[in-house]
Length: 96
Image (cartoon, rainbow, N blue to C red):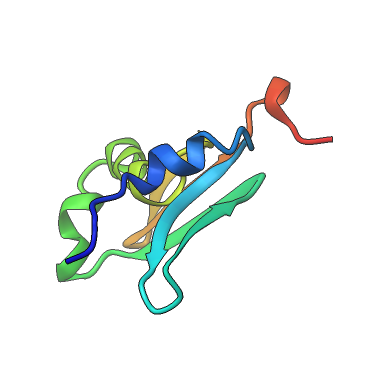
């Protein structure tokens, strides 16, 4: 049996900004931390994602918790059955 690891806590401790997500590479036994300064998500609102597309801001905030943990939500819109979410580092967090 393996052990339980809080990958988000591990990546948060790396002291880098703009954490998108953390995941485990079971094959190589590594924790992978993905970072970015900007993330744009465009999601077609089909049956699978219906709940995310009811209210643009709420849907983008739910996606933020999954895909853009260390970024701030800057824009949320729903146009022609497409959810548009734009995230970035806050001005005072920008990497140099």
